[in-house]
Length: 461
Image (cartoon, rainbow, N blue to C red; front, side, top):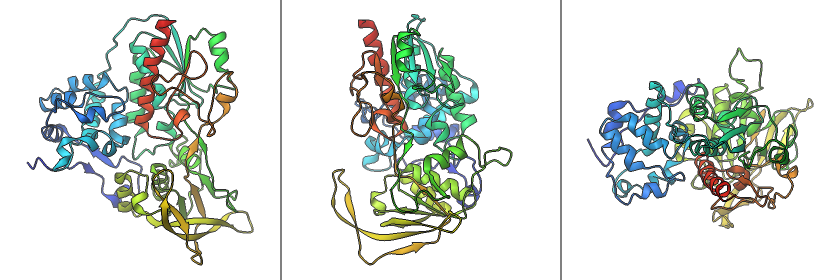
């Protein structure tokens, strides 16, 4: 065994997986997990833990894997995370825990994410449920949204003894975990539903089809229904567009709509009555993880797919693993390119997209070099479908129907970083509703922070 190298993880063959929606990564088996765990140096001052937004005891659970105590490893993770099978699959470990792994200084870091996934999958296969830690105190807390922030906050509060109810606008719980992330990256029945069941097993109640701001307001929950505190984890589901000519044509989707139709409404299944026009030649505008998800989904629906991104590959915001998988599957990358107009035929459908080549200039306020148009470099791409993946912002419905709730210029709710408290007493917020679109694990971290803040607030009250 070469301790400087990770134990390779098994994956579907690219040519095979490009034609199905089965999970790409197959994960470790028991012997592979123990072998990879043996690479961990069990650092006393573990930098990986400090880099984890939910502060999982990483050396602790890996030590249990080394010794074959897989169930105990699950309990160690469960003290900090309610969604380990999800995080093990979609968390950007390379820029967080694994990015700080000491083993990575002279070799490859320990595959912390794959080990977390292994432990979580083992627990689900064996029917092992998380441990309840406290008797109920009877105090009611409402959670708005059942995505990663809401589920984490709810799970932590339930462990503390609170009577927690999650209110979800859609007909199915899970938020972005069910509507945004494709089946081939995050299986819904085998993973997401089971982790939600684990949260419910802690005593959390979930009410679906409740649109806060329409069905009921936050003020109603607090003044009429006896909730002493509310956490807003409603995410950022309002898509952004470029504002270029032709953008309202038939055949132009936001990535949110395209993915929701496929992931939540099962448009990729022949026996579901929720069809989508997938397109034969699809352009996905953007370079983040959502753009990769949309592109790889369109590919599996039978399209030839091109990523159009205005910066170079070095500036792609998507995870390296997702870009690698997209390339393996045959996605075309048209970089340093920006759309200027979507062409529309006589029937109102997309029939092409005008673009211009870009070059990188001086860094912008984010530190990335700003793309600048190259005069005279215009060209046209032959496409019949365009998916815009330019980021999202929070829907203003909740903030506009809640008295005394401050938002910033981006319509994000203003919340204290250390407690999650908002300008309205008893109301807390976290995740994409506060930061704008970010990662699952950062939303979970915000949910944990808010749970602690709510507990401290109600104890003081």
